[in-house]
Image (cartoon, rainbow, N blue to C red; front, side):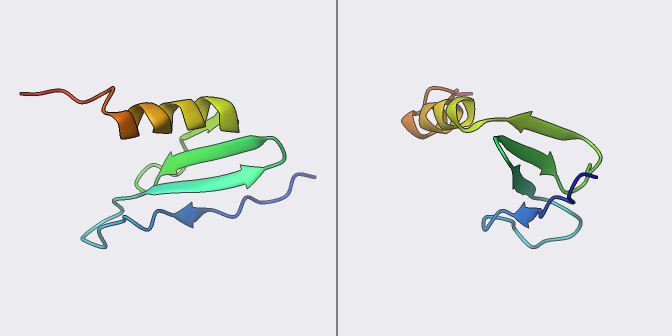
Length: 66
């Protein structure tokens, strides 16, 4: 039997109307991410790819001008 995940909301959640935040849960070897407004859809990964994505975002790799 699998254990239920303990979902944590982002501290950057705006607290406005509706569910407007990212939630994270961990299980052995796997990280789970989902949006509050679509809790049945989740992204799973492990720490290495997620750390790479976060480093890219912090460095401005994905910044676009418009």
